[in-house]
Every structure is written in structure tokens, then in C-alpha cells.
View 1 (cartoon, one colour):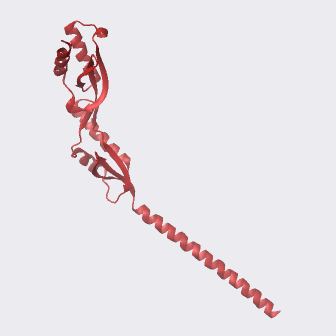
View 2 (cartoon, helix red, strand yellow; view 1 turned 180 degrees about the vertical axis):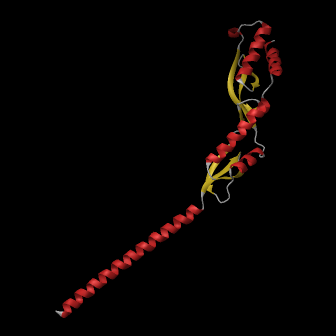
View 3 (spheres, helix red, strand yellow; view 1 turned 90 degrees about the horizontal axis):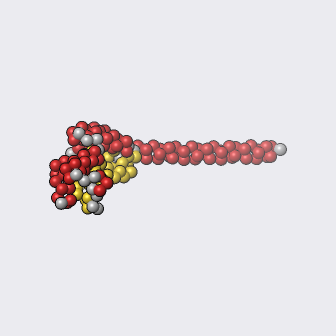
Length: 188
């Protein structure tokens, strides 16, 4: 019996040793996976900001970029006395790993100094299916049309003048007198 007992003890010891090795291997694998995840997360995810293909820098979240754009647009709205002023289109946020991202103030500074074209949600004035020009607001376009109709004595429904809202560079907008002059020249 002693040989049977010895063999049984030996088999139990081997099973315990196998279980111990398996649990050690599993523990080491979990540790390696956790360390890998930690290293990857240390290289934080963020966005690279591009304007017409030119890199302007990195931001941690899209919210930082959007908040900076909102602040600049609000400031421009006050400067131009028009709530429709926008930073030009052509921005692209590309997900990437970020080490040195811009904070909100740095992002505002970079966007302000980047030479980005300013646009306005303006209104194009169309006379007989021909665009005469654009104005910075719909109300201003309506005033020009009303002034032209008063001067020429033409009724609104017979004038052939339409307003079409569109986003245009602010440099392409015309003031009241220039637009009135253009409409007169086209209608005469």
C-alpha cells in the first residue's frame, strides 16, 4: 500500500504544481495586457487640425477646436456688427495620437493668426436669373431691393429680382450703394 499511497501523493502534487503554473502564466499574461493598454493610453488620442491641407496643430478633443472657432466667430460678429460672420470652410480634423496638444487659448491664437478666409452667411441678389452680387445679410438685400423698387416704381412681383442665401467670402460682399448701382445698371 505504501507504493499506492506514494503514487497518489505524487500525482496530487503534480496536479497542484500544474495548476500553480497555469495560474502564474495567466497572471503574467493579464499583467502584460494591462501594461500594453496603459502604454497605448499614455499616447493619448486626439486630432490634428488641417486648413486646406495645411496642419495648424493638434487638439485633445474636437470640442476644444469647436469652442475656439465659436469664440473667434463671436468676436468677428461683434467687430463686423453681423452675427453671420464665419471662419472659412476647409477645416478637417484627423484622428491621431497626440503628445503636445494645444489648449483652448493656444487654439484660438493659432486660428486667429493662420490667415483663414472670413465668410458670411450672405444673400446673393439675382436679377433675371443673373447674379448681381452678394450682400452680408438678407435684411440688407431686402432693403436694397425695396429702395430700387421705390426709385424705379416697379412692383415687387414684376421686378424679376430674387434673393438667394449662400455662404460667400466677406471680401466678395458689396455695400448698399454699390449693390443699388449694380441693379440699376443691369435693369437699364
